[in-house]
Length: 357
Image 1 (cartoon, rainbow, N blue to C red):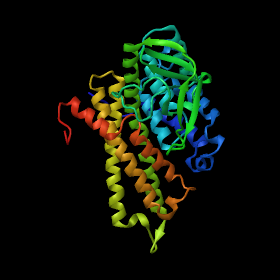
Image 2: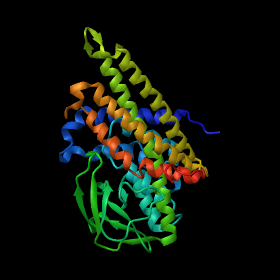
Image 3: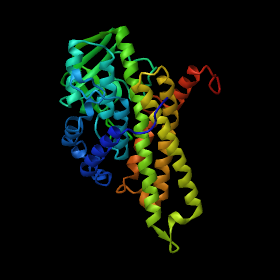
Image 4: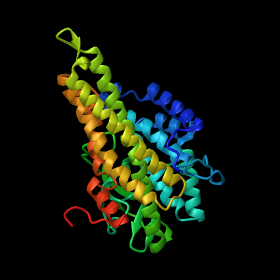
């Protein structure tokens, strides 16, 4: 039976990651760095990836990783979502790492996996951020909207004849303007063939596995984001007074926050179920991922919208971090397959015609 509760090890990992982010990645301070080179803190990434060991959670110990599972990686992503932390954890430590692990034993892939597990290098799969697990891979050439490409040392390039590893120095990476400034996008054009890691059939299966894991664990990032928004809304309405009463004492606002609490609780169950299904290799993993993404993406956006609105005029300002959460939630709503994409996938998995079909 699926266990949705957090283990002691997962709780300890959460405490370590939260302590690091509280000290080094306060959202209130992040707003001032959004459009500066200081946005991406290399020291923070080293501390998270190498010192805590979060980058190697999905990697077996024999390859230099922690030998943990998607459940532990999901806890890390919850905390990163709570702080909208600008690090390439989802793209490198989950999607790229899972793609490489799916290739099986291979010298070139194993060496790269070991580097990713220790945080020495970061890798990015060069597909557009909105690409879902079952979407066709992009054609060879320039690929737009590649998330975190500017932060990568290695690019994993799917081509018609297989999967290649290309050094970032051997590619043209042109920054694009993203809605979510904490997750940069770029157009990527490989300028060198790179090292062939797998043939076409193996590459297709590996890319699908990487994107499926990414979509499933993205739900945990959305959960963490929604939790922060709810907690911040409750905190603000409890301390802000109007008519000599706390805003949170008005019944209409109580109802809105209570409804949001119910949605966040449901999102937690969906996200934990997806992480557990991926961790156990369950045949129901595609179903669990589709459910989690179809639900959690909507909850994250709703929570961020409520956070902005319940802060009133303050929530509309650039100085308050609420806008970062709304932008991340809206960007995540399209990442790794839209809610509509996952609903269509869900309909096919349960053999139920989707609405309008």
